[in-house]
Length: 377
Image (cartoon, rainbow, N blue to C red; front, side):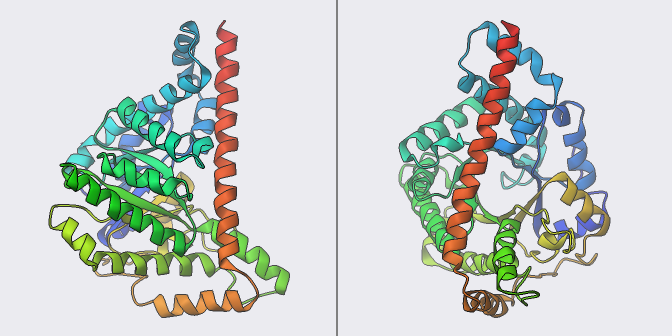
């Protein structure tokens, strides 16, 4: 049984400040050796996110998948369906481990995310069909279906929510796209309510990617000359302005009407929180984005760093490193634009690259499972 507070004082402070700590990592080994349960008890982890890269590493690095792969091969299952079955098995088992957290938090946390096939990111109809299938296949109330925030993904997000499917919107980089995600969320929830769904049971998060923004912008700033003052500041400023949009949404009439019927906010989720530049503190994308009502999903390396030397004060009940920073964040973004860097271009490139990276990882996973299944025949 999970405890109410993590053993690490630093992670306990982060939780006390209102940040839900999720783990951006999953494997069958982690589930079955009890490590995921220990993550809950000792690190205060209250959710799990996955992506194709995580599954590619997990399946290729463990023998625990071999018996299931052998069974799938003996039934001559198509490799695409085999991969869905394998990943859904892990997510279903993780949902069961997380179920006490789900029950304790009335369904807000205790969530485990599984992503639609990233090759469908530009196909609305196929994304909706995949979301429905994964929702049915995992068959747990605390699963979330990850749908990318591509132009084609936006109507899929609305449709999935309207049908009562909880959605983790992923690969958000720009403020404009985030505003479109918010619109997709509100419309989907309104449609769900009109269709008679209990909106209090439908939960969504909006995964705003962080460190990749700095990696891209820093490289462009370095081309302009050394030591630009905005170096290492774009990602945090971008995320903080997303929080401002979220606050405006909560204050709006449309969400207030949904909240009156029990709907939960679509919480911002800080993703890609591992530092890509060794010159920066390894907990930077956690420490600088502490505010109540958000999620921070961390790979184990970042979670460990935060547990050892996170900077959230121990008396953190009113600590907030985001609110009140919005004017400064706008100034940072203006300085980047004045340096000749278009954030619209940067974020468009990051979205395309994000989809391409996940497709490459998915195909790597397909290749590995295909080879493993062939070896069984």
